[in-house]
Length: 303
Length: 303
Image (cartoon, rainbow over all chains, first blue to last red):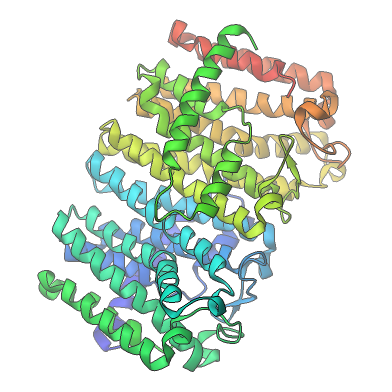
């Protein structure tokens, strides 16, 4: 990560973390046990990629990042809830996440399910508050919530997880072309949809026009798939310790970009997507510097 | 149920069911497997109490019920998701719900978790669309989403489930006064919060003022607790076949209104709450007829 991007990520992370702490402040109606579980996963060392996308998209479209903090927090809460539920024994059954015990390992399965539910719900509360704080018009406030829900829901991220579970073990039976189509369908929704929603949310908060929204969405689709390809490559060549992971997708015979195209083929695909991502940012000039750097970082990272 | 209420519930149910079908229409991005699981639980014979509250609250405040259908559907989706997750093996571990196999029994645990997540998320999409359709002002659109999220979330319904799990087995160790406080705290959130949110959502959609909103919220708090008391009483004296349930809370030594106050004491408490519910509707005149009937029905029902 170059120095400019590091600074931007650190600044955004500090702002978003403070906003999340505030949104999860102790109240008489919030049981301490679930507050603890929600906080545990929120502050377990995430890269804060999605909130950074919200904030930078807002800046690109002329809104001060500080005015988009609650929506940025909302997107991180949705991302975190999805990790908690994906890790459950009935789903991917993971004991570790970013090198730390997963939510159900620490708090039990019931609480992990509820903490996830609580985070997802709190996200919409936070985004709605943010719309009100910014005095968004009714149409835009509704659009903000709608697009986040669509990206997170059964047509978006949740649908991607469904497709991913369905694709398990399919690898052997499929032609390469069919496998590629399924893989892209999974990740466009599983990772891509929420990344696209993060950028679009920042844009809508800023009152962006159709063209700006589309450019940012296109950028998001490119980096979303590139991000997943990089993940698959890291799963093969990466340092398990840095990744905080046990086992690997290849060992599980999972359908991945690396297994489908080989490490070099997958890397070439990711680079091409990142080029397309850059191209989509042209209209924003210098304001998109952080988004440019992020696109490069996504395929260069080692964890 | 008297004939007027029966007609109103049937009319509302038909409208809400059609709205839910439309919201869950097949699309290329919605995996058929999760669509099926979401529909299974949505159309498993629910009483449509919460959507009816949305529609009747809207009518009380001068908005045609048909304009509140997507929000009514949203509240039923949130209620349904909560039942799916509550029934999971890690939570209440129920095999039957309304006499039918629960979601995880039919579709497996992973899909049940995801179907719940999908319904919760779709609910916010539907409510946001409804706000846009009705050209709500930004402040009101945001308030609609915020209040639904608050009622459904960790301070509301989800928090109630957390408190309920924590209260399990506590009965023996507590004084009657302490047990009563815990019980009320559980149910004010677990059942009450979403009922209150349903009424408040209808009111906000209709552009209601502070006084109308407060009256409907108070009505909701009363019938929410009365509803739970009636449930507890039915668990003791009701027909297991009609209830579609196996086992009973008493057999499980659960803290309930019936175990705490006895069946007669619990019934008296419910009647007093229903009286208070009626009193809160005074200002709405004839427009609140269905809500009056509903309050009476809640403690008179046999399933």
